[in-house]
Image (cartoon, rainbow, N blue to C red; front, side, top):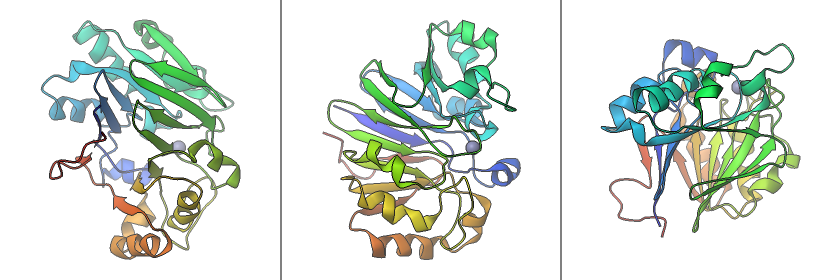
Length: 262
Ligand SMILES: [Zn+2]
């Protein structure tokens, strides 16, 4: 069994996105049977093409919510898969990205939804299966009130995606039996703000899960302005597991190790 994460982008929030201080191209999960592009923000289409000689092998998309750093390139990627390469695309997205919610407009047009062979809505408690991946979703506490956190599970491993959210104990249950946690973290220690996760909260998240590794990504401006080595040490002192600060282009498990998820 094989599974790999490719971090095409590790930036988050409007300032980092605007300046492209880090890329915002999302994460691709590769399994034995498929490739799924998670949260394709600005640059996702460009870097998917640069990364892969055969980008048409991307078949699925997961859009956690409708903010541009998670969804802007969903439409061009759907077109790439379906129109440019005449393949089938499957879209998993939250209510807001699909239909709009409150003041927030939808980020995937009806035309683009129509290009997909399958469209499924991620919502509180929803469960989905796609090729060799099982997806479990839950609602997080964020500016897009329908933002979804989720787990992706194959035969062997379960990866938790703690997406944009205010920290809350209520959210921990979904992730208890994960092997790896990917944590979207915009803020440094001591500087939490509403609707986002800061480094302070990473130990609390990791304490409640069996996961032995946390991967920090979706770096916001204030976090990038801080001393990242110190931020990492802060977490390492608090938890037993392995702490990885993702960087643009990073693959997990790394190229250098022969370790696979098997
Ligand atoms: Zn957001």
